[in-house]
Amino acid sequence: MVDLSVSLAGVTLKNPIIPASGTFGYGREFAEIYDLNILGSFSWKGTTRDPRPGNSQPRIAETAAGMLNAVGLQNPGMEAVLREEVPNIAKLFRGPVIANVCGFSLEEYAENCARLNDAEQVRILEVNISCPNVHAGGKNFGSDPQSAAAVTRAVRAAAKKPVFMKLSPNVTDIAEIAKACEAEGADGLCLINTLLGMRIDLNTRRPLLANRTGGLSGPAVFPVAVRMVWDVYEAVGEKIPIIGCGGVSSAEDAAEMMLAGASAVEVGAASLRDPWACKKIIEDLPAVCERLGVSKISELTGGAHHGA
Amino acid sequence: MRQCTFILERRRVKQLTHDTWELVLMALNSQDAAAVNAPGQFVNIALPGKFLRRPISVCDWGKYHLTLLVKEAGEGTKELVRLPPETELDVLAGLGNGFDFAPETMGPAPVLVGGGIGIAPLYGLAKRMLENGQSPRAVLGFRSKADSFYLEEFTALGLPLTVATEDGSLGTKGFVTDVLKELPDCYVLACGPTPMLKAVHGLPNVTGGQFSFEARMACGFGACVGCTIQMADGPKRVCKDGPVFRKEEILW
Image (cartoon, rainbow over all chains, first blue to last red):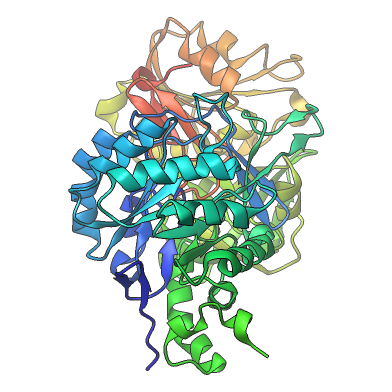
């Protein structure tokens, strides 16, 4: 019997598989597809203070081995989430929930995190720092160590729960950002968010997405994510846990992400092509662990750094 | 929604026009075809070598089959209509709300309005309305006679049918709206390109109706919100809240 349980900053998940933010809503749609209680956790849709309608159509484009999305942080806003989604999640899922939180200013990040202090089922805050900073010319908070550190400081002061900063891969040195977040008290990190990309329609000679650019996800980004998890584990892996995210489509991919340094693994785009992807991965994990000769899946974390 | 396996039978792939095909997908068991439960729903088909599934409206269905009309719009649909014989397809079926054709919703004179590939779900809808003892009429528009398809099939159902072509090579010259505006006040069930939907929606004698939209989608079952459009009471997902929306809720 393989022990699939993992620990994230003191929060125990019964297995390391977490549907990634933005591919799972607030659980309603997938609850019609399978029993959510098989999951280690899930990360809900990035939530801002105010409701956001998101970007114009089209928001989705196909790429080789993946997809671009430019949904534009569409969400009903924190108040509606607390009023309608949080009570509903309690009916659908008994495990710990990860709340993905966004903001356009330091104050908004702090306020959004503080409002979740009393939401019992929310056990981890996943702070998306890929949002543009409206006070600094729209540059993403996650694009330099100083801004990432400032968000970490602000949310750490406001939140009573473990704070995981979700890092953008659209940077020169993700390890520097990781160190800056750790130094300000981040309890963990989640990486990677999507890679910025673009497709152009040959017929119209215009970008395919109304927003022009979108975030690349799917199997295409998996090796990039593994490399970045590796780098971040080298930098801060002994101090704080990492949730690995990006292109994971199978139990083998999940094990590979853990060997690179992840303590738990988020699965995103795979669930959009195959709604049962997380269920299949969880079912396949014990056999993969047996093949790798581990009786506790948590033994895989960082394993690639210590081998011969 | 149900994950189904359908077999695409080569001998039942029929080219209808230079870019439009009829595909018949055979189900291995009756539950799979029964996953479709209303005209206007769609299926989302996984294709080899493509990450995203392709959402295709269901034209008609029986106990063991689905009929799809597919227009080659890009790489995915081009590949779909040319798959090798007896390909097994991984299909999510029973997606979307479909048309509500209860008589009390529509009043006595419902008109099915289709443009181009948008006529596909109207065939299955017309068939079921006629089986129900309702008397719809159909107004179908195409670019030209050469682009028209499925007219024999619609005619065989036995409903009043008017065709419009932009160049006048078949039926009335002009758009479906040129035919519709001459009719008495009516309730429409429409599917076609967005400019057509908008023009039909704006006709003074169209007193009510349902309009089926299309959008680029990732999941097709409401999770990714990639296909969201703004409606009178907020953002709506074309895949899950639609694809059919009521006249009163639509914003252009």
